[in-house]
Image 1 (cartoon, rainbow, N blue to C red):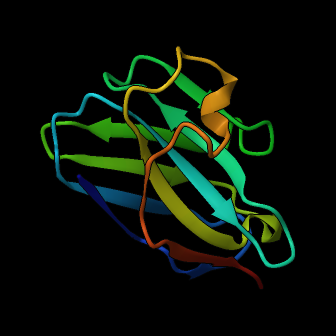
Image 2: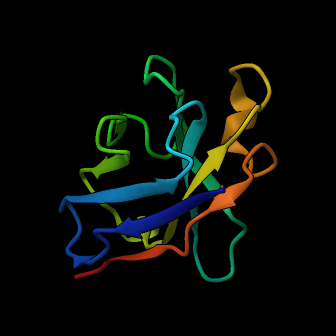
Length: 128
């Protein structure tokens, strides 16, 4: 079993920055792909970015490329999402997720299907 707890959500003005954290507990063998998803009111859940077990492989949605950076510190059992240049359209509940024994590296990791474990989310609001 893997438990995920997100933190770091807040209300910021457009152009601001936030860093989200996802702390992993339970099976912390680190042998899994992890990702960030978001859900905004009236919209479908969207894959934001994903990172391989070692951190060597990254995926990002076009909407956040150049602005959001995913990273992980396996020694601390924590994954991060650095968000810069925030826009009102980034407003959403952000969730972290972990995939065990998923498919080979590829765009499927920006979809919910490979992920077995999910956190409860942290709210990010961008407005002036």
